[in-house]
Length: 195
Image (cartoon, rainbow, N blue to C red; front, side, top):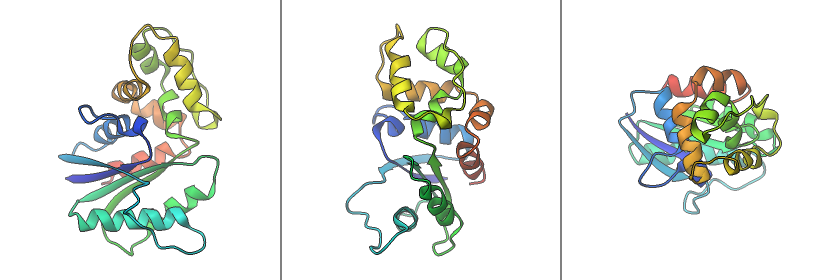
């Protein structure tokens, strides 16, 4: 299955020579993916219809159309909630919309994608090379990116934050991630599995 993976930032996408954290998570959840190409949500040439409200709903539909135009079998799109609760409803509406027929797994990371990286302290400990305390309710952490940066700063391992996330995504227990991030990672994981 050929999948277009659309995300917001470099921490999700990683580097060209290495799978990023989001691609790693998606491939672990859906083994049928043969090709996964990356794109950025914010691309200027992918225009959503203008008008009042529902900006992320429109943007998600536009990406679904783009994936279909490029002959992908499915699209996976993840954005951060960034303390804007309406994004969850808009992305859920786009997930369920049948205006364009293409398999999709759309998700909103609460509050940010970085929170997903805090869900499994055992994976964190293995990747960082020291014992990391359990991070309770990662989706409630107001600055998950900052917490991840602090954890990384304490590590004797030399790696960028993007590499850190990719390593955690490879090591993380999916059940722990779904349990700890039950508001939005769990539904997103189910959507990816059902592709």
